[in-house]
Image (spheres, rainbow, N blue to C red):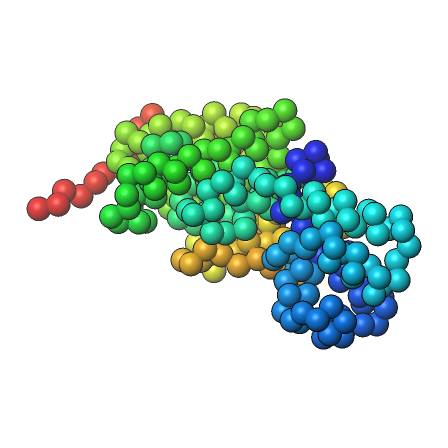
Length: 290
């Protein structure tokens, strides 16, 4: 499960949550901790939210403030060391600015709704290349290929021995837009059909006939983690990247939305039937540019 994936991003977040709970249990404010450590309050906040890592020495200093015993101090220090390890995605830091990939790598399950494009975990190479090129006009060939490589590398999560559980609802608009042209899109649809046959992947199509629905505010992904409680996240996409949401009411809201979307969507077998009909008799027509 999440522990076997060993994501340093998740370890950093777990450590931050633990340190925050310890501080709150002692009734100490962030400002008081910052004053004791002679650092900024924002540094303590970034540590507790997992935005930034913390070195073992700082962990020991924090543990002293929270009056922890030696065994618990050693446990926190080990967590800090694990959080310092590098994930494969960090090699691409110059082209990958979101923390989503790190959290995705640690998740046990992802519930995703996509309104415009095929999710990255299910994209073919040609579809990904066409999508990135369209979204970034003038992109250099080298950067394009690096971004494609990142996207394809992420797909190991659904092909490894311990694949994550992926449930996806696709708006019908995703299938009607021929990204990369009819041939690329046909191969992408064939790929979706093949992926839907895997036991840990469920694909449902939300048809136009459903009318107005709960997902009209946009695409999102709910990331579920089994290693510890209170770690689940929602990633709501937007043009600049996305926003992580983790409050209980936010998780409940998006969980309810996803449930409603699944009820409005075609059943999995009906969705595969629609995909097969599209692959057999595609309706994509590109307007000529005159």
